Length: 417
Length: 148
Ligand SMILES: Cc1ncc(COP(=O)(O)O)c(C=O)c1O
Image (cartoon, rainbow over all chains, first blue to last red; front, side, top):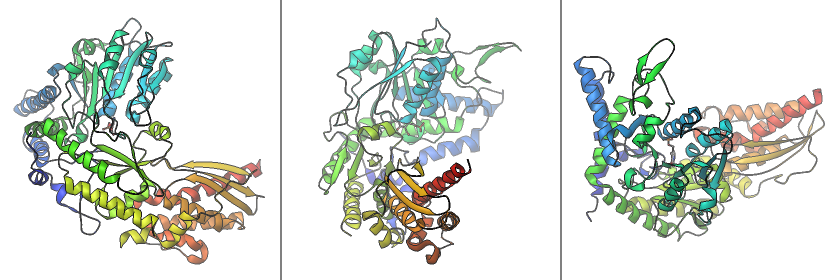
């Protein structure tokens, strides 16, 4: 398999050449929170504003026509990136909004609709969810009287599937799981869970924030019903996310946000709505951001997700084996590379993650510290916070070595001082 | 170097050997404060007769800055009058939020001045204030309890 020319990739990302805290090279290991952006994405956004800016789908002038074409072109790019039909791809503001859209749409559904949910019904999540894929379901359960239940997590950071068929039962309406944990790096095996979900007539929602940016995800072959992810974690701009749903579901699903651009006819009393995707895109859309995301998809596709994934796997393996040589350090999450992505969380005896993160920052190394918006998972591992390094295509082994050396240096600073 | 301006020797000393970190029973008021951005939490017990801070004990988990600073405040305000204690807390808060302009008065803040460097690390200001705000909260709750 072709390997990556990292130095040429690094040149595409202007921020990677800036200096941090005095005169340190930036070692950016926080792509799990948000990725950096290549010039082609920044140029696409700027080009939209300088050459084509107008409200898409409104107005008969040339700019409106071009804006519409670019915006819809971005939708086509995203659709082919995840193996979806174009009409199934909805632009939102973020993954958070995408998940809330499903939850609120279900809450809005009348009885008789397949989306209707009420007391006695069940919503299934897991203990490793990001708050974005937990709180909307807690709220839906609270509003409707449905019951929220969850998969537990094993000591080595995998989903505990031993009670799969009890947890997902005939009362289950929705199963919402993360594809890859943003804390543990675990990639969840979906096949049996999705099969069981459909067996009982429930819907499967995949939080793909940490997977779609890093390896091939095909919504059709996964046989799922909905997917949510954010543009900003995959080289795209902030302010754009994706909600994908199967066509026949979107056609039946009531809208969450209503207003302009999503209607068919309107009287003072009522309105009828357009078909998906427009039905779910009320208001003048985030066009420049969608176009930027389209450019990000082009960038990733040109390099190839398979190449990116194997590169990240190599970095992750090196990071795990390097970090494990450090005294008092524990990896939180799987240490074998099967079904594992490029996110590595760890703890060091005697050093709080905030202090470790601060020391690493003073060496130019950016990592994430804290609860990672996964507070229940922290509790599961009897901690309040971890330190997390996450890798992307622009990282290299020098970055991994800087991390390992930096952690050892910080350990000496705090523990041996 | 910059890291040393944050992690003063005094701070690491308090972190490794925190003072009064063991909850004393039957407090006048118990408060629990959480730093929502990182999950750090402390529980703080205040003993007061309404005019004097008789005792402050605490327990919790957190970074060196939050733990050391709670250790400092618990030692500093014990024995002080309520008014003096509140003035001390205000002085600390002013220093921490001054972005480096106010380096603190050692006569008032004692070991607390070691945290002056935190003011230059905006993400850590909340850590430094955790124990102080918990103390302030406990004092004000004890006063409104007295008034009732
Ligand atoms: C697994 C996971 N789900 C959901 C989210 C929420 O994404 P956003 O904040 O972009 O809406 C994130 C990222 O923060 C994440 O890592």
